[in-house]
Length: 258
Image 1 (cartoon, rainbow, N blue to C red):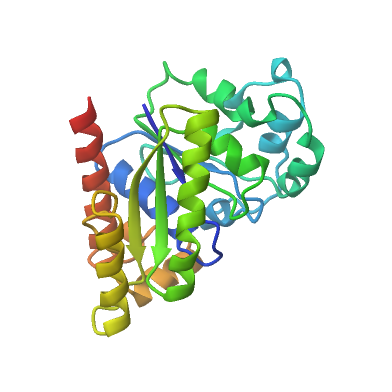
Image 2: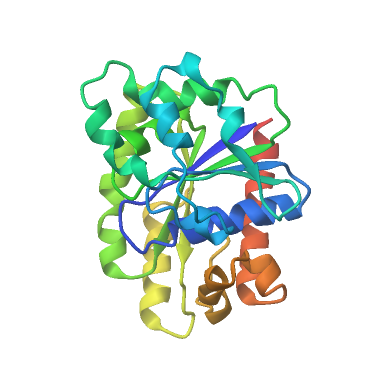
């Protein structure tokens, strides 16, 4: 089982788009996947039609672990092989509630450790866009970090801070944590800016930028409104092609490490 935290501290970074579509593309390739929506905005949950507020995930963070099982809050999606833990709007108050609590950053890891014997090949965590206790939980629980980034200057400027954060967590809390890759999103190959930023990313982080890029796509932008991942909404679109390519790249990297 490989645990991926999809993280970017910049809003509009294609974080949820990548979490949903990577998870779906992995499932399409016959992998068993658990998607965890750790963002109180619950966009990934809504994408799959889960729009009724649930306290489940919030309860796991705020009550004694003996009072519940993470298995109790796992739901099936319409995608074969893809399950989900939906977000709770109450998560927005979790940082305040857990502030100062000893070991609060390890809560999610303790639950996910209990799933090691379960059949999932991948767990994909859609992190909160703010680096609070929830995102810290994801980083402590994860094996890999996937960083989606839009190809414009403002998005790139926060990348160094994020990389430093991951390094700090690795040094202090989770020695196995690695940045699996930086994913260039909303790439417009017809513009010089996109090409220049992509080239700069590959120069600065030569071993960390995925070969796959996610091209700008109207179908990809429309998919959430129709409650479907791009592999179903636009099966032959560039977005579907790109996320299938990313899934294949993730699987290949995982296989090499075994």
